[in-house]
Amino acid sequence: MSDALLTADTLEAGTLYRLLSGAIAPRPIAWVATIDAAGHANLAPFSFFNVASVDPPVLAFSPLLNGEGNAKDTLRNLDEVAECVVHIGGEALAEPLNATSASLPRGEDEFDHAGLTKAPLGELRVPRIAEAPIAFGCRLHEVIRFGDRPLAGNLVLAEVVAVHADPGVWNGRHVDIEALRPIGRLAGADYSRTTDRFALERPR
Image (tube, rainbow, N blue to C red):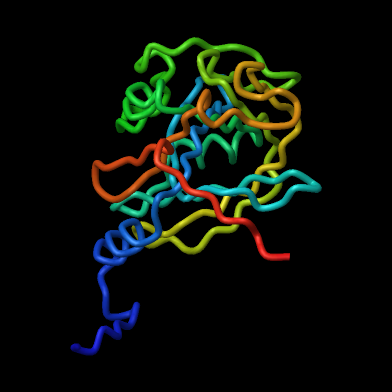
């Protein structure tokens, strides 16, 4: 077997992206709504996403800078209005979720582009997706910025302050995974379903 040792500083950013996104999979998807200072809504999916804390409840997702080293609208909006709504879309909303990954001009509304309906969430200024069964309304806790090179990450830590949970998915104690049918991100154009699962009892 040949030596498989690689050093990160010898790999181009695009190569590292393909290795990381292909190997660290499936990844849950944060479908994030934000607004700018003028109130224009933005909606975008991010698969560098997970739970960072339970008490306080904090979600973590990381928008990468684009290939020119510029920040995406989500990050720019958070600098202007420090709120966001993180949705779990599920398989039924895969097509509109994918549609919101398009690179639209700043200020153009991805809700309208994807045919989605806005709904309020608590006292937040940012709307939620009415069609999404789970939505976590958040206030920005912190952004950890990893530099200004193309594909540099910006780790957003967002504290949950309000939750929308459809009773058909959440009964107050358990999430019905068959009803939610969350999807995961693989590499390239590939996604994964949660219909093929197995269970292991956790050791005492």
